[in-house]
Image (cartoon, rainbow, N blue to C red; front, side, top):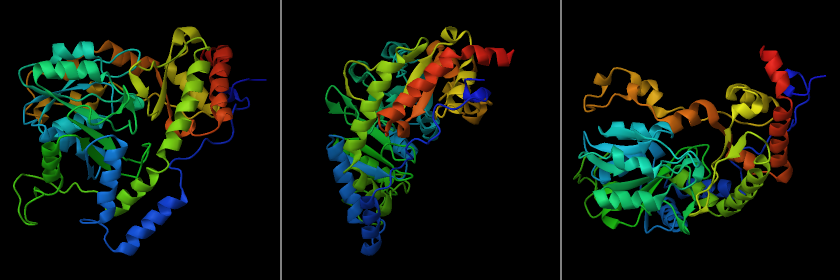
Length: 407
């Protein structure tokens, strides 16, 4: 009788993991309050309250709500002085928005490789990518783990570059005891459906620089300025405002996010300890200066050699059949069709041929190694994450059946 569920055996787990978002009564009450107020947008006190509370949560002086995380990256880039033709250094292992936001302000994304142990941008690769037209470094806190901000900020200081933290996955994450976002010049967050703090869509910027947040306000709010008239427009801005319903929904979650963070971290530590015992499975390392990991994703590295050469895609297929929600995650961004099409589509990009780019760590992670488990699977009890361990071990122990079936 077959052991593996993929081959007809009994799955390790038949029940589903917790569903996200977690629906709590306080969230519904907050939405009701907005509805009853009759102020659903501009001028709503619920928006101002969220910005105040989110700034406090991220240990920043200022926060500005934005309609989504991609728009918040664009606004941050413009506010930091990135102009047409300027270069912005980003990791090649990230969501498309990190790169597309750069293109949408007519700037040039410059990809660098990642650290093989953390999958965050590798500071050792940044300096060689800096040119006279580089204006900013945009590290991404992948999976909720802060990038090496000490090293990145030191490079930026020497070259007089802005640091824009892409913290879309890193709500509440901490670097050396301080929450991310305002450690660099400015930080961008997302509240899209999968995020650890969610309103379906939404975003925010945080910073300790008042002049910078005021400029962001102008780009976010049709070019208006805080001290100006309603129909006074001084810069080219758009309407990237967040609505009051989303703001209230997010504020309600700020009362429960600490509990969720603790549960995710506890379960992730358990997985770290247990999965390391399985040959060929290596959880990503946590940098010693990371004092809080947001755990938006749980990522481990898969070594096919320890599974007798079983391709990662087949391993993921078998793990899914055992009841574990997982997938391979990002591919190298510079391999997306967006970057391999006719470069004349982006006339401001000169001298960069993304087709010839080869970043070995990124390609190994994207094409061979990375296995992702998303954050809702970390919100259960210990038995839930123990089932993940059992399923991985089961695939490892019975890999011969998968190889025989393939042949």
